[in-house]
Structure formats: C-alpha cells, structure tokens
Length: 85
Image (cartoon, rainbow, N blue to C red; front, side, top):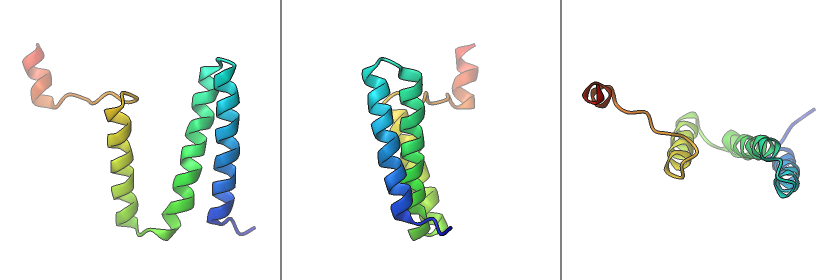
C-alpha cells in the first residue's frame, strides 16, 4: 500500500477528533496521547516533501515550541547545575 501525505493528514484529523472527545470527558491521558499521534501524523505528512536538513530544523523548532509553552522543561546547562549545589 502506498501511504501518501493525504493519508497521514486524514489520520491526524481523526486522532485529533478523538483527542477532543476524550478531553471533553476529562480523560486527559488519552487526550494527550491521541493529540501526540495526530501531531506525529502531520509531521509524517510533511517530512517526505522536505529534505533531511529541513526535517531536523522543523524538529528543533517544534521542540523549542513545546518547551516555550511548558510541555517540556528545559534542562539546565551543566555549568548551571554546578552553581546550584
């Protein structure tokens, strides 16, 4: 089977709807999981069109975005860890 970008996009939209329904039911673990699957599917839809280096830049940008909104805590630099002790 030839999986194309539109298949990943359709799957992402389905998972996003499932995430929304779970969120409304206050089932946050499942909602988070399905939202993550949706995000991964959208990335997979886009990456075949991008070069490898572009994909790495996109990943770093996404990582920075989730860090900036508090979904991922930024690790202190090694020099900062030493100064805390």
